[in-house]
Image 1: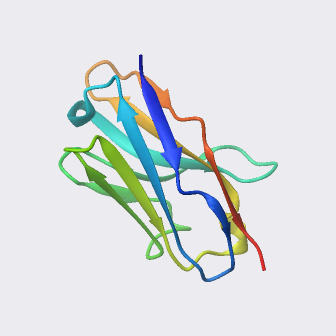
Image 2: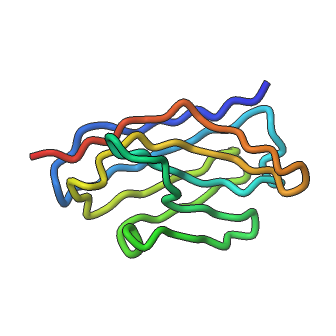
Length: 117
C-alpha cells in the first residue's frame, strides 16, 4: 500500500519559514521523482518544486530563491523548506511521487500552509 504522509504545515506570518516533510512508503523511492504541488484557495493545483533521484531540481518561478526542495533516500523522505513566505503562498501543499518506469503518480493527503498577519 502506497502512502505519502505530509507534515509541517501551519500558520505563519509573512516573512516567516516552514519546513514540510513527506514520508513515503510502499514505493521504490529511488525510482521516483518527488515533488510538491500547491493549491491556493479557489485556484488549480500547480507545481511548486520537484527533485529527481540524482538531485536535479525544478522550481516554479514564483518560489525560486525562497523555497528549497531536498530528499533523503535513506529515510524515503522529501522536504520543502519555505522561506520568506508571502500571503500568496497560502495553499494546501501536496506531496507527489512519479515512478520513472511505470509513470504512476501517487499523492499525499495535503497539508495546509496559511500565511497571515
